[in-house]
Picture (tube, rainbow over the protein chains, first blue to last red):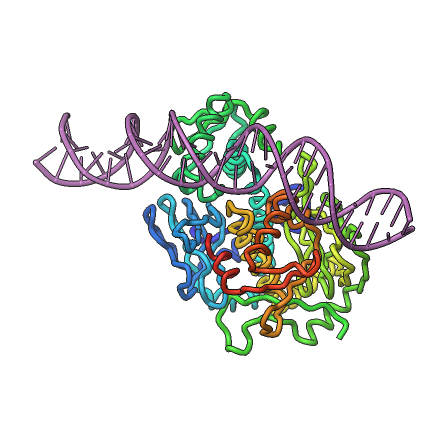
Length: 233
Length: 233
DNA sequence: CGTACCGTTGAGTGTCATCAAGCTATGTGG
DNA sequence: CCACATAGCTTGATGACACTCAACGGTACG
C-alpha cells in the first residue's frame, strides 16, 4: 500500500502481540489523501531552518538527517530518521532544523494545515501521533545520555548498537549493520570530531568487536562484548 | 483556579497575542476531574524507573528532576521540570526514568487510563498535549546540542541562560535566576563533574558575567557578554 | 555547638580536539 | 579504459581541558 505509515512504542502495556503502534489501513488512506509521495536524491535539502513550515514528512524508505547550523559554522546533528519516522514538526510556523537526505529517500509530504484538521477530527489517529512524538522524545533523551559519555569508542559502540536495533535483522551469527551516513555526520551526531570517530572505528575493529566491510557497512563480530562496552556507562 | 495547566509553543504561527498554547478553563476543569493535587517535600521520589506507570503528572509549583541510573552507578539527568510542565509519559506501561522532587513541589496527579480516555474523546485538548510533547522534544534536542559543547564555562552559561529563559523576569537591570537544584544535579544535567561545575561557576564570576548571591541564586551582571558566550558554540 | 553534607580548591593524569599530512574511493572527461 | 580531480577518510604529533583523587572550607541542621 502506497500510503504513509508510522511506528511507535505505546505508553500503555498492551497485548503481547501489539507492542508496537501502527496505523490501520483506513488511517493510512486518510493520510494518503493529504499527502504526496516524493522521491529525493541523496544530499537534497528538504527544508531549511527558519523556513515557513508548510509540510510534515513521513519517511517511506531511505535516511534523513536533521541538523542545526551553529554560530561557529559547525553542524550539530539533531537526529537521523528512517522508515516510519516522522519529521518537520515546527515551532511557530517555522522549522527549527534543517533536514537533508543522507541517502536517496522516498517521503510522504503532508500539508501541515490539512494534517491539523485531520488530527483534530480523528482523535484515535492523533493519539498515535502523540505516541510517536513521545517515542521520539524518549529516543532523544537516550541519545543525550549517549552523548554524555566521555570515551569515543564507547560512543561509537552505542551508535552502532542504536543502528543495529533499528534493523530487525534475522538472528544471524554476525549481523551486518548499515551506516548510510558519512563519518562526519556520525561525528556531528556523537559530539566528536571526524578524526575521533575514525580512530574509534579503528579501535573497535582492532579489539575484534566489529569489522568494517565498507565504510557504510559494519559487521558485528562479538555482540556480547560490544553490548558490554555499550552498557559500560 | 486549582486545576492542571500547561504551556507550550504551538506548531503553527498564530495571532501575535497567542503564541503560547494554554488550556481553557473548561479543559482545566475536565483535567481536574481526573486529577489529584499532591504536595511533596524536596527529595521525594515520585516514581521509579521501571515501575508500572499509573499516573501522569503536571507541575503546579516547584521543581522536579528526572534521571536514569547508569550501570556505573552514575545518574544521568534527563530533564528539569517546572511549573506547567508535564512528565511521566511512559513506555509499554513502565516509566523510563526516575522522577524526584528537587524542591518542595505541588503536582497534579492524573490517572493515565482516564487521561487516555479523555484525550481520545477531546481532540482539541489532545492537540495541546501533542504540542506540549513536541515542545519538549525540541527542548531535548536543544539540550543535546548544549551538552555537546566542550568547554565547561560555556555549558554552565547555557544552563543559566536556559533557567533565565524560564523565569519571565521583569526586564530588570541585573536579573536574578533561581537554581533550585544542587551542583551535582547541574553536573549530571550538563554531563560534567561536580568539580567542573564548581570551577566553571567560579570562572563565570571571575569574568564578571554573573554573581552567585547564594548557591541557589545567581545574578546576571553582564547579559550581553553572557549571551555571547552562550552563542559561542 | 558539633556533625554531616555539599561545595570549593589544588595537583596530576588521560583523552579528545586541533593541526597537518597522507591515503582511498568515487566520479568525470579525455 | 585510464588519468585525474575531488571529497571523504585515516593516521600521526601536540596541546588544552576536564576527570580523578585528595584535602579543605562553609553551610544547614539537629
